[in-house]
Each structure stands twice: as C-alpha cells, then as structure tokens.
Image (tube, rainbow, N blue to C red; front, side, top):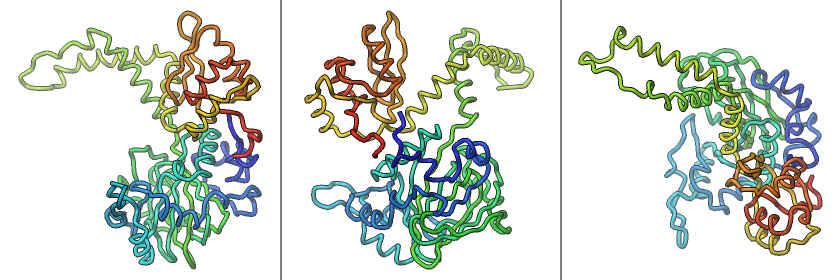
Length: 412
C-alpha cells in the first residue's frame, strides 16, 4: 500500500509531468531536465552537505558504503579506511581524516547504498520503486570544484540526478549501445564511448540546487563541478527488461526438460569429440523439446517467478524491533493495524482451504478460518485488531507483517 512522501508521489517530486506522460514520452529513451522552479514539492530536504559530513564522521560507515574516485580512477579501500579502534574490531571503517586529505586534493566522494543508510532516502526510494515497479538505489557524489570525477561513460540502469548543492555542467550524448543489460558495462564498448565523448554533445546544461535530470540507461555522459563543491544524488533504477522474462521462460522450460528421461540420457561415445554430423540429431531433438516446453508454459508461472525475484530486490519499510514487541504486548481490540509498507504481501491459496501470506518476509501460513480476514487486509491494507483477532494480530505483528497504523499515514 503506497505511502505518499509529503502528500505527493515520489515521481511527481522529480519530473513536472504526469506519470502517464512520463511513461509514454520519456521512460527508457529520452532525458528530462527539470529546473527547481518547476518542482513545487522540492527535493533539497532529502540530503545535503551536512548529511555527508555526518555520515562519514559519525555513523561508522564501512566500505563498500563509500568509495573515492580521482581522475577517472576508483581508489582502493585502504586509501580511505582504517581500523575502528577499541571496541570496534573492523579494519575497513571510513576514515574522515583520510577523506579530508583526498577531497582537498581533488578526489570525488561517492556515498553508496543511501537507500539503506539515510532515513529520508530509505522512505523516498521505496516509494519511487513502488510507483515505477522497478528497484531503486541511491548514491551521492560529492565533487570538488572543476573536477570531472568520472570520465565519459554510460550506466546500465536509468538514473534520476538530483542536484543538492553547488553546480555541475553536464554533457549528454546518445547511446552507442542502446538499452544495455546489467552485464554489459560501458567498458565493453570503451572505444565507442571514447569516440562519442570527443563529439559535440546532444545536450549540455548546468544543474543547480533543486534541479533534476532523468537519464535513461545507455546515454553517454560526463559532468564537471563549477565554482565550488558540488553534491548530487543519483537514484539508480534497475529496470526489469524483456530479457528477464526470457530468462524465466528458459529456466522454467529447462526445469521441465530435466524431468524427461530422453533429455537426461548420455550422448554417444565418441573418440573424436563433438562433430556436427554426429551431434546434429541430438541438437535437433533438444531444440524441438525446448520449443515444445516453452510453448506449454503458463504465463502465470512466469509472473510468479518474476515476482519472486522482485521481492528479493527491495526490503520492506524499516521496522523497530523494540517498538514492535511493545506494540504486540499493548495490543487492544480497537488498535488500528495496517500492512507494513512495501512488504509486497500476496495471499496464495493452499490445499484444504488454507493459504500462505507470501511477502518479502518468511511465508506466513493462514488457517482456512482466517483466509477471509487476510484477503480483506491485503486488499484494504488497514484493519482493526478485533477484526483480525488479538492472537493472530500479535503473531502478524511479531512476524513483521503488520504495524500499528500512524495517526497521519501521509507523513513519512
């Protein structure tokens, strides 16, 4: 059940377009550059330079939650980490002193995984992922004045770039390898990317605080900080593609073929190894079997497989273990409960009239007498404890599937 951020959708805070217009005219193929003035919701509350200093100096970050780049090269972890000292037996804790020296010398600081380490971005990225239907991560790039940080490259995921402080000049060029997959980094096309970088950009502009850029995967880009330190957030959208559908189709088909004794049988003894004439009949037999298996797959099986993968790419909304136990102990009949945000719950029928509540957590078995109540909960998202029953409500609370409803659910 979506929880709006500051009463607005996450996407509305990033583009001055309706979700339908954005999906139709820009998603996956065309950049969008939006000045802050066209985004009345604003983005500057999400992160900033003070938060950078807090994270690197007081939060005990460890690699790989931070990396450092200079002159297009990513530095080794030892160049910016050290031991944690007494009571913290770790060897890769971020060193604020080393970062100070590196940053003063022109290095770019990259804070990775902010969708797991900074509260406002945890909430915002989870909401954006739910609206888009694709997983989202958040990184921050802090670049000294006149530093490029990274040379021309492309990303294998779509990005929203949020300028939080300072100014940065961007240069965009069309893809040299359209719609790259996750295992097709720009280094696979280094020569083409470098050649594209030597040509005039198709778009060149400066992002200032509060401005946002949407950039589809594959677009070649570079950026240079202007007149001071530049801090920007990159929200990476790890898109699902038709290749993922193909992967699941083939996986299901192979599982089916593995049950066929004829397909499991050994190839003939051959002292000369594989040869076209000898192997051609086996290739044709397997091809025909594979085509039949692919043709018999129910689309529901593919959807189920993709949903299972999708559940593993994100986490539910954060939950406080101590507060949750306290809420379970204090539960009353009139307590209003709701599904934990972003838990992705779905009720799946099982034999004998029962069901299992499938989600990003462990499967929760549901007795036949409770199925109707859980159907209402999944559909509506909110129920009173007396409608669920105190015993079942407590078990759902302690399983992390329910939380006590906020008085103001639109407030993050």
